[in-house]
Length: 331
Image (cartoon, rainbow, N blue to C red):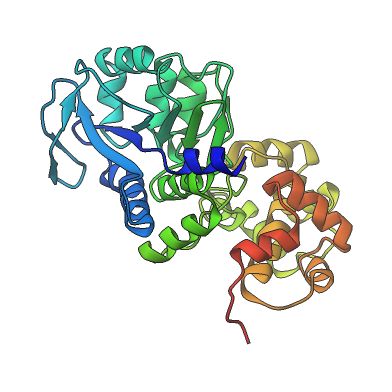
């Protein structure tokens, strides 16, 4: 058994990162740096990284920085993992067939097909995410639902996995996903070493939200919803029934439900739960308060209710969340 694990971890993996004009630089550089730093931490080449473009031409990122292509799509590729980045250039690529045709042809051959940010729209356009769990940058959610309704979109997760298909929500979450792949390939100790090398936190788990309740609330233009949000923020442990919220917002319960669905894509009760979750996460990350005390302060009342919420929303219990994301040097 140990011999099999050693063979797996010592194997050289060939990673191809796709390129096109106006690609988001971070979507290319983030995963590449994780794999490159893994090589440094291990003291050997565990990942051989290359870029590929339609005709092997160099490409320009969204920052104006030019990048070299190592090979073209029609080159015979030795590849284990393909990374599909996103960025402003995705919209143009959606109207072309070359990249999608390459993904269709290469997908059966690779072990992992990794889509970063809006790169998942390209993978979806190739028909590879049909019926599969996926995510993308929250700003592209409307396009995702409209153009690819046959995909099981999970917009409130920073990365997803369905078989060999991996997706991350956007920008820096490509680093989270790449660290997760390194942890799978080489273990948590190596992944932690890479995170330290890059001076980033160990990867957030895939169940974490790519945007928080406060960020959602700040984006609304509705004065009455802003007022309601501020009341909930100031008193998260209060009795926030839909009836009470409707009274404060001076509207009917039915209208309140409609407004919340329109503004936040969730019900009023779900919004309150996620606000309480955000408060509890902050306490777990930045304080040494007990889980029982945090449950009370954040409005869950009991540890059991908070635990159920954490499992449902994040896939971890509060103690495991604190172990992974809590500050180590708190007084």
